[in-house]
Image (cartoon, rainbow, N blue to C red):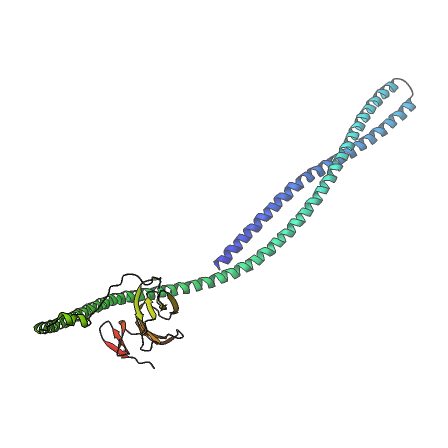
Length: 378
């Protein structure tokens, strides 16, 4: 409401200013015409008066001439002649003045014509400006309507903006609360990780103690066996050494059979098949590669994929048709050698470490030495 009153006051002030400017323009354009018209009227009145005076003087001259003819010649003739000459001079001067007035009248008439044409042009401009003014008023009315619509839309937008602000504030409060909960959970997670590390350290310590105890028992048993073996007396003759084969023979490699780039990272596991003609290698690039080993050659036979982490252990089955592998993603997988396809995938094997073969049966082991599964393949 206050905005509408302010707008109406502005409109009234604009109209008053326009009206004053039009009055000033009319006064500026009308004043020269009024001066010319008044001057023309004065000249016309002066010309009519001079004509009347000339007419009176002409009548008076005729009367004097008639009196001169009636009264005869003499002294009166001289006086009349002087008076008539004075009157003729006066008539001549009045005629000259009348000529000047006619000339000025023509000049003023030309000026009036010019000013009339200018006035017509000014009226045309005035009509054009009035048309423009009416168009401007129409535009002002349209702009008023548009302003009202914009004010309505602005109020609606402000209302929506306020709603969004309230929602944003509520979301900020919720976000702060969730962030606080996240911090608490983070601290709890840190505490749980610390506890887990402590439990793992404790388990490792227990495992180390068990290993030490097991090693001590084995060492004691070996020491006992060595003592028993040392207590036995066995006679060995030179002839017997010549004809009997030694119990143990060994040789040290002297040269490299073959060298090749197998994986894009570390090589973590190697295993030959039963025939010794095929080598399986597992690496940190999550691949198992099969190599055909010849006398002096080593060629890639295939690459087994499907693991999501680095390979830690590989093993062939008894027939050499399956390959078992363990990886760092807590999963074990089985591939067929012939078509190199993934057949079995055991996931979520926590703390998975390696595979072993015990009497041709694959056994899945973990880092804590706990046997999880016995697997058989037909």
